Length: 415
Ligand SMILES: [Ca+2]
Ligand SMILES: [Ca+2]
Ligand SMILES: [Ca+2]
Ligand SMILES: [Ca+2]
Image (cartoon, rainbow, N blue to C red):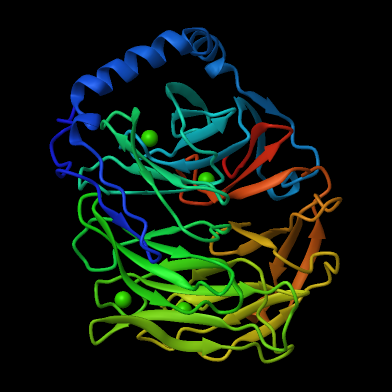
């Protein structure tokens, strides 16, 4: 176990753009308090842990019925209830684990690398949670978390190295925070920093982390009224992570661009603005960076109205103007979540879902040769919220995670 007081500085000072500042007593984070917290959690969670131990090995493996079954995916309904969850390797064994939130309690479920999870640790949360970032906030190998609510402040959860998390500190956020922060290494020091996208014209904030002392390094404009999605990679190879973002507005203007943010001459700034060619709009949907053409440069994919935008990375973090590839899944207009899967070796496709009422059947978008068109398959039997695509079973191909009636369900690539 790590020395919990090892690297915590004498205080946490978090000064975001609007001047919020919190200073905490390091005694609040001492090892004694952790032990007390752990004992308390154990006492409170004995029943559910026992339940988990008896049921963790009995995750139901159903025969594929619709959904991704025709593409060779195996369906699993897990005995893992949550209002919200996300994936990260929390015990450092290389297998993805789950951090799940249910009624104010956060639970760590350790993955076995084959699609089953076992309850490992629980703690009470100070805030509601609808997004999280993971990273090396204290410089230790194990991933720490910062969990966020779109309507309130965040909370830092420190990992003891085994995947047990203990209550760290509040992470106050001023302003709208509905689309989640992203973790990145903005200065190459291998400590995890944050990019905080906001709304209401508040732009985005690059927040530098120095052992959980956070300070705003740069403020940048948002692509539109709101950031709707962001993606991170070191696009220009300078050792500092860069950001691409899309935005949206309540009233759609003529052009909603995607923006590229990179470090130029020591400043984090907008280096490119990309508007769609076909419709003039790159709107509201998810964005990701993936190599589409096999040249090892990460290209850009964004969900737009009635299709996907793709933009080729020309090298050094500069993109060609986007191309629009229409699909015929006409109901999926705004705010679409994209989850990239592989239907075979190097054969990518996207599950597309938006969150509008009554539209909970995701569609599968399959590129045709040369990416000139996307065929659409309605995925009957795949009801629920798409959580994302992650390689959960360790075969290097992404699996699909969904939240269905408050339970985690998986579509695994392997048998
Ligand atoms: Ca793990
Ligand atoms: Ca860079
Ligand atoms: Ca490429
Ligand atoms: Ca997989």
